[in-house]
Length: 327
Image (tube, rainbow, N blue to C red):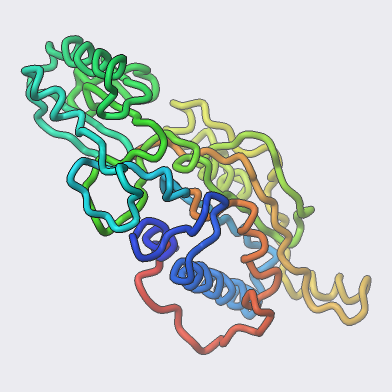
């Protein structure tokens, strides 16, 4: 299931966060509640169909939005975004710098990163020189780091093959190469707000806790195969990138929830079924450009330990999941 409500709620001007600690606006809070309730309905159905014990639930995010702290937002000159602080519409598009230096950019994809394909790849070194000279003097673009000539090729690929940008520009945190009045953050770059995302795995057999080891989103697919008792190395991408499944997960024990119910009742009179236990990965990294959706520490308090909403009320099993679901 792919949810977009929180992702959109994070970035639109009317919503977003209210401070640097990630306190959501009222509208973003509604988006979080919508996702929370939707997850609760899914867990309810797993319970109803006696599938809880044999189900591994993974909740993650493919990117965050940057900046979370809107006071750090800087946008292109001419922007009329109402949440910009005075003087923060002060950014020059890197394409304008290159054009002024005689470099033609065939295409630019720009958010909180700038991806540039040159009309003439032989001008790449000259283009980098133009950008670095401005960075050292006025830094109008405001550039933090420049990746060029496929550096590093093992991450981005070779521009000579056509798909990889000739030049990738990571601006200083808070910069968005946009004039949009409709958004206050974006994704695609390499900042911490962008790439430090939530990852939670849940199953009744888990010992609840937080994992501080660094993990990556790309480990999810091989971890799922491992949990199913399949060979993660069968994934071509996992082999090519030497991606390892999480060592913390063994194949799920194939048992019916009805059997688990009987076991629980024999050990703890009055129990019905073991609730999901959550393992929070607090240092998950999303690959740049293909969320913190919200701060990872907030997720556990929002996911229902049982099929209930955050308010503690039982979810309405008859109400359908509505909308263009979203994370």
